[in-house]
Image (cartoon, rainbow, N blue to C red; front, side):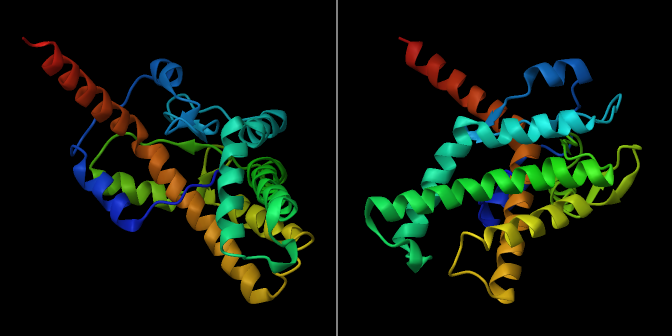
Length: 235
């Protein structure tokens, strides 16, 4: 569970601004160019740039990906940010305020990331023989790629290579929400748990959108940087 919030308008703007068709990279070149961080901070260890020459992961590899996502410096930074916003909103009154309260918010926030990552990327994918990776489409219209990226919260690839319902995403996040009740004393009702599950799956869906379009955004940023550099060097 890699967390990222994108506003709907921003998602549509990304999709609409892309060219109608883009040629996919070769598997080797795409893998070499894959960044381990999105926007310089968000962990990106379970994105596969192509489905070419698909090979399933072992259970050990699934746990390795979950570990890389969990112990990355970006996860710690995002946990600290989420803790600040949660404390400012006083979302868990039992944690309190001040330094001691923030420490509890930080621990709970980081726990959400770690438990969610291991449940949805390792434990349930291992038990259900499903692949936790996001496979970038990289070709087609912006709208078709947007639909594809959003759909991956509901469908995934099994270790057999066939398309399956994404049980790991929903059961993994459900287990993470249930476990979180042990340290979120103020969030124990069924309604709050269901809401938190939808939020976590929605955030994962938004993260998939960014994973799909991030190489295009990088290209736009590089082109803009080259134009600015060229303009500044002109007499």
